[in-house]
Picture 1: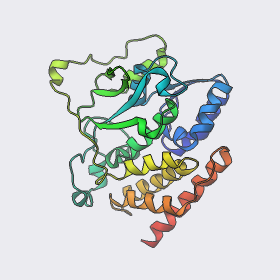
Picture 2: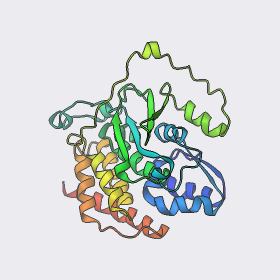
Picture 3: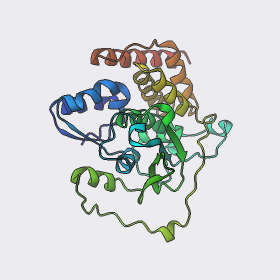
Picture 4: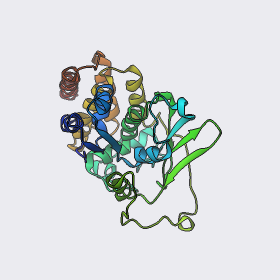
Length: 294
């Protein structure tokens, strides 16, 4: 199980893949930073890769067993990646400027660490998940639609060319995808209470507000740019979130700092691990320099 938070998870997770292990992936940054290199290593070393993030685990369950080679080949037209919207869903950009670390870490549905909670609040977490989904399921960025679903009951969906939309539902409890990964291809009791649809009563959906939460757009743009752009995005975001939690940066400054670093750093090919790690280091230095000048 790879559940290390952030870029620190890349090297040990890639080492496990190169050792031919069955890897339960809960570290999205490994794929965000080194997607092509990482996914190429999986079949080459005979590893098995199972996604554990609830959204990607849900999509995995909604797709055919063999889904490589492009979504269209399997009749899939779109992946629908659900998002709770975080604690500030519906807030204006002006209101977000005064958000405190304590507010940002108070997620309405999931119990997570500070870094992931802040990423969820800015929607950067969903942006990183979009990048991860592209690599996991051989999808283009335009084939992944983020859908805000406040109840966090539908964990994600796959739309098919015949009009069908297949969804995976369950209570928001990480024991479910972990149990799925541990038992795959079988099923085991996860100790999770069954979903009571009468208690849920309703399921709501809305588009994300990318004007108030620009991190989602920044992530999609990074995936479209390719190369080292996603690694730069992730590195700048890690520095920005740490600065916000330390009181050095306002909440809205996270996206601003990421955009500044993105614009300053050239996109290089990401076909070698050394180039990816170098881009990560450069981006962190650039982010710290921008912080120092504030």
